[in-house]
Length: 354
Ligand code: COI
Image (cartoon, rainbow, N blue to C red; front, side, top):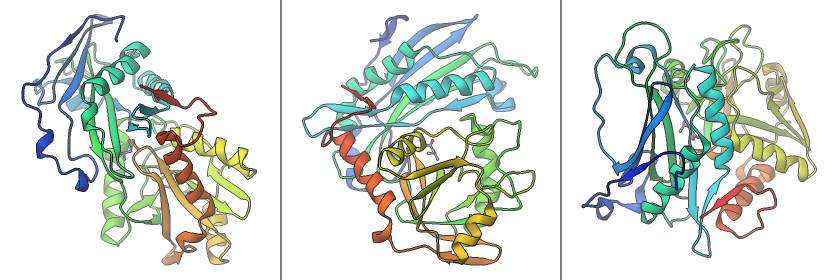
């Protein structure tokens, strides 16, 4: 399936699937039988191999371990009602990986390797796609600097890997968020828009602090003044006030979410007034205080649509309306599930069908 590179295939003789409890998958703990590993050297992708999922050999001087050149993607596949398999908007993930690679001084992964690799792996490991409601096969393509060298400059060697894992929901319940006005995830002019490991590392300290206070995640604000809402780190954020749908505009501090983009498209088509702009903490706090905030929800590949149950701001918890009143988030969730299942027509050409 990968036409530009010779692809070697080594299949496992011992599938691990019989030991998997598909009813209790959680997120990111169970890994399918195979992975694809491609290598970049001397300015080109030189090899690609599908092999049994397993540990990698690495030098302690490998560049990524010291200077963090590492980017990744996340996308999902599932069975459709007619037995075919749908993958949601993989071309968008590929484009975002190219943008992340450019920002992190890493080489471009050819579309043929990215999409062709996904197709190949799914074909080999399709029995790992869960059939349980709400579950799917999460696909994790990633690339890291693999040169054995300690000088600070872009690595000259990389590995691109794809593995897959059957997953359930990322959040098993509606989330409690704390609007964070002290710590920052990313800085203006930095790498917040790249899907790179460092952004997740930078979010951990603040996230652990809010988790100790009983929240699931921090809702990050701009690092300079903490006046504007940005994103959650594990997902983008959206608010509904009446017929208005508000979400922070993209820039160098916000990840360009594929689910975010899909939902904005749908919300516009469904007649909502979509406002993609700077969303101030003040206006959201006022809407919370006046009981005007009808819905807040996170959006991401892993999270899909995560209802926000509670938002904390300035020493106070605000409870949002009950889930049955979340008309937009519920409609989006149903739409995305039905689309991927083949229950409704793919009018936007969002699905890669295998
Ligand atoms: C995704 O939604 O795919 C992500 O990469 C987020 C991560 C927190 C799992």
